[in-house]
Length: 252
Image (cartoon, rainbow, N blue to C red; front, top):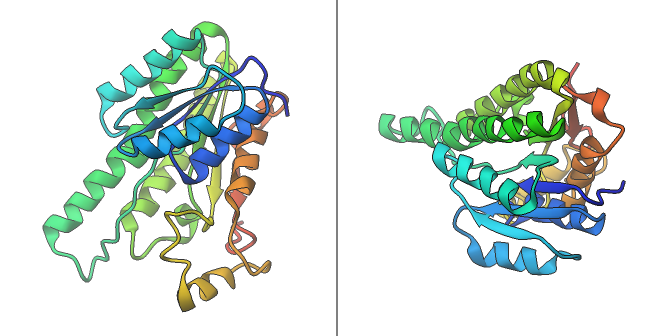
């Protein structure tokens, strides 16, 4: 896969899947813009690790519609075009319905949907306006197996990812005539800092045993799926949802 002369925007690029994906694109010749909300130090470290030149980092709260527009417009102003968007930014916080109070419940839903669904939708909208004018592009949205199997401790997260899947497929149909492909990656647990606590101790053993491979995904494996969907030749896979969960959850 060659991404020479391609410009890529990755939201949530300061760590984990976003950081690994940024490196994978840069290694293949892309110019990469990574966004971050508060982890400027992490974003700077990622930026410094990228091979090649012309990369940049931007601070943006994806849950803020105006910040999203400014972020996308800034990337286009700096690079002249926007070929690929990876909607990776996401949040989750536990809010089991039988344990939290009503205020906590409402806040969890509002905060989660603001970033995971509305934020991603706004990134898609702003990016699509530029992609339509330039004659095409690729949008890859990062979802979760939780969209299919349920998330009892994180119901807002599961719902946001299920809605992200549906939105992506709707946009794939609408944007196809503009040569814009919209696809989805749906990982299970991934060996990242965000998942570190869940993967420690006995709980981690149980999680890893969900897969027949006895482990969880490596960030590089998720990044490779993103690269595949974003590559030239994968356009007709628009609307597709790729599971990367080691057969830990199988859907029909």
